[in-house]
Structures are given as structure tokens and as C-alpha cells.
Length: 416
Image (cartoon, rainbow, N blue to C red; front, side):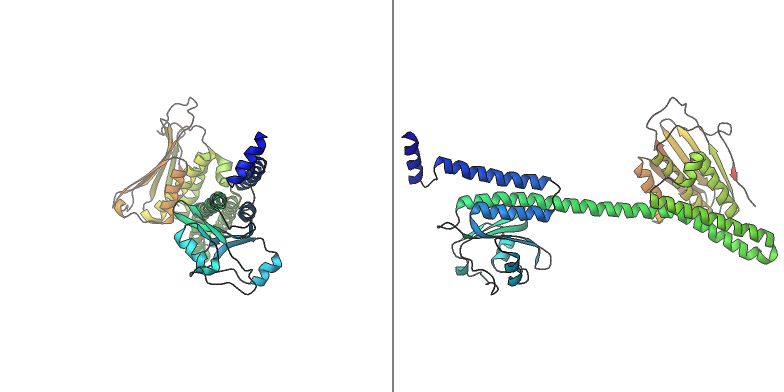
């Protein structure tokens, strides 16, 4: 009897009886749960939005529903419909434009509830095959102050039109649509950033790995052309050197493509690889390139690559631009860092006008990528010093060692 009185009271208050309310709440919970799981899963954004618009139509008791995401050209990047068959949608024709009440919702970003859309002076009409709509409910999809799109429900199946409760339910799904769209945009931006970073890495690696050897190939080829009549034997030697350098450049290019450490570094270690490059570069340019290396701790492969590539670039720059016939390379441990110094006594330059070429930018990027510090000291007429300091992660109990001509010192290169 008490339950019957409660149900009668609920009817007089305009509320459904308790069992009906429980069933409605269960349905809402189920739809919301599905959407939340879809937003956080690996489903495509379009699939999630389709689930949202379907759930919004079902819970609002609408015959039709749509979800629109505008583009920058006055149309819609996404426009999903529920309640129409594919054939009916095709008969309607192209997607709508951002005009009429759709445009109003996008501009104002406020909910819209109308008993008859056709009576509103802002209504623009619809194509001949479009179903006739009467009462409508529109809710914006917002990310803070920015309107991302809208959910539009039309033709309430129960009498009385859309209610405030319907608006609350559709707004709930609009909030989940905003999360899905925001996550999708963040993911897309992350992919774009990854692509840009990968392009920068490839440009840096190609410059560091290949351009140095290609420059030497050109120098050797020119020398061979000069010697071909005057000293054919040496010309053949230079041509053989060209073939060798071209093979090394090819191996470097393959290593860049495969994302591997430089072949020289993998084979000879850090100090040995720098010496080997110094020998090659010194002979090619007819200069003395001396390398002194102290005892070094174990380094991360990325740190070794950064030090090796910086040495390559700094030696190449000194040989091409300084005019100096004496270039010094020092590699040593100092406290909790491994330090590389490449110096010459050539033309130098004004540090305030350091050119923004790819070589200097590459060295800076490599230093930053391993937490290192790069400094360039120069003055007109007094030469240049490039210094890269890379922090050591583990000391390994090795005493600090600097090159002094006795601990691991060596000389590479020579004037021909």
C-alpha cells in the first residue's frame, strides 16, 4: 500500500515510478560507461563520436541526431548522423554549411531548445530530401571558451518536446565529445612534432655523417684532376681515395637510415674514431691535425655519437674556414664530465656574428640532446676554440685525467 501511494505521488509530481526511474538511470549509466570506455580506448575518434551521437539520440528520446565539427572553410570536417539510413543520407546531398541555426550555435556557443525550428527567423531551410524537423535541441561541444562543434537532436518521440533534463543528458555527452576531440588534436599535434623532430634529426645526421666525407671527395677529385698529367701515379692514388671515401659515405648514409651509431665509432671507439677522421681530414686538406686523448670512462652511445659528430664538424669547419695549418683536438675527462676541445690559430671571427649555418646549429642540438654544454670562443685573427662538455652518469672510480702528452696522447694527420 505504501509503495502504491509513493508511485501515485510520483505520478502526480510528474515523475516516473521508482522502478521506471531505476531502469532509466541504468540505461544512462550504461550509455555513459560505454562512451567513457570508448574515449579512453584505442577506437578511432570517428567511432567514438558516432557512439556519442547515437547515445545522445537514444537518451534524449529523439528521432534524429547529428554531431558536427566545423572546418576552417565554412563547412564541416566531421558531420555524423544517427536516425537516417545511408541511402537517406545520400539522397540529402552534400554536408551542410555553417549557416542558419547551425552557424548560430557555433558562433554563440549556447544551448538551443526550440518547439519548432521552422518558426525561428534564423532558420534557412533544408534540401528537398531532408526529413521535416519540428522541435530541436542543440548543445555546443566546448573546450573551455573554444567551441569545437555541437550535438543536435530533433523530433522528440514523446509528446511535449525536449526538456531541461534532455538538455542535461545531451550536454553530458557533449562533454565527452570535447574530451575525445581534444585528445585527438593533442595526439595529432604530437605526431606532427615527432615528424618535425625526426626530420631535424635526419637533416643533422645527414649533414654530420655524409657532407664531411663528400667535401673530402670533392677535394680529392680536384687534386686528381690537377695531377693526372703531372703525376699519374699520385692521381691514381687520389682516385683510389675518392672511391674509399665514397664507400665510407655510403656506409654512413646506411647507418643514418638504419638509426645506428656511425660505423667508424662502432668499430674503433670514440678516441680511435676521432683519430681516424683527423688522419683522413688532415691528409685531404694538407694540414696537421693532432689528437690527444686521456683515459675516458664508459659513455652512453648517444653521448659518444654527440662527441664524435661534434669533433667531425669542428675539425671540418677549421680546415675549411680558418686557414690554419695546425689544428689541435683534445679529449679528456675533467671531474664529472668528458670534454672535447677543437682549436686552431687561424682567421677566427667575431662571436657576435656567428653564422647560423647548419653546422653550428647541429653541434648545439647534439650538445643539448645529451645534456652537454657547447661553447665557441673566437676572435678575429686569434683563432677559434670549440668546447663540448658532456656529463658522466657514473664515475666508475676512474681518476680525472687530462692529456699531457703521456696518458693516451697521440698525433694524427700530417702535412703532405
